Amino acid sequence: MFNLEEKLAEATENTPEPEKNLELPNPTGQYIIWRFLKDVFSVIILAVIIALLLKTFVLDSRIIPTGSMIPTINAGDRVIFLKLPYKLGKMPARSDVMVFFSEEELIKDDDIIKRVIGLPGDTVAIIDGVVYINGEVLSEPYVNERRKKDFAQVSVPAECCFMMGDNRNHSYDSTMWEYPFVPFSAIKGRVWLRYWPIKHFGLVK
Image (cartoon, rainbow, N blue to C red; front, top):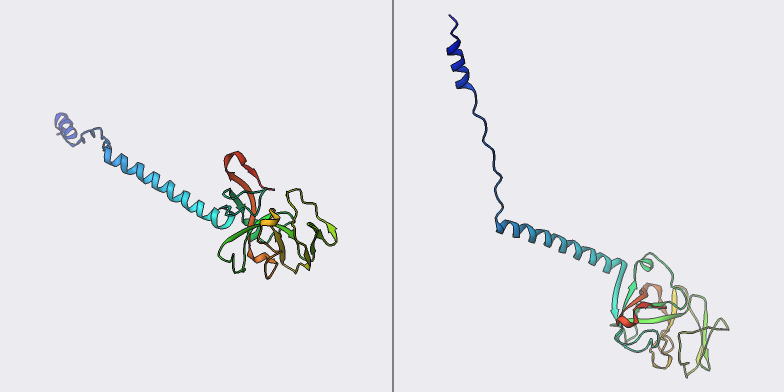
């Protein structure tokens, strides 16, 4: 015989109790600090990786060690030079200020900064302080003082440059080297920006 009361009692017993509200654990101060340090460390690692990639492939900086590029750049100035275009095979242009290395004994351990004067196929000569390229006078508004010594004409070979400092009488450059030419393969980049001292901040031309 069906007993309504017994069935209701049985249903009540089998009904699961409602779940209590679950409380999320309250983060401790130590956990919060650890998460913060983890985030900071991740940002630092990413920044270091980006900086290394930029320094290796895109741009770099140098401190100018001498006055050979006065008045354009002074000793102690800090400059940024562009690397990527020349890694991709860009050819230097006349009057560009370049960073390169040399096999000359006196300077082979240093990065050198000079201006491109002669390009492949050019003839270069200096007479009475005036630079002649292919028999024509080279306009040089960046020079304050002409070179005192003449320089006999040379022909710039393929894939090479003829380099000179703007401070003509105080620059150890192509006019004095045993081998007066800089191979394109020795060029590291073009000086682009002077960022120190701040009062001289600007593009290098």
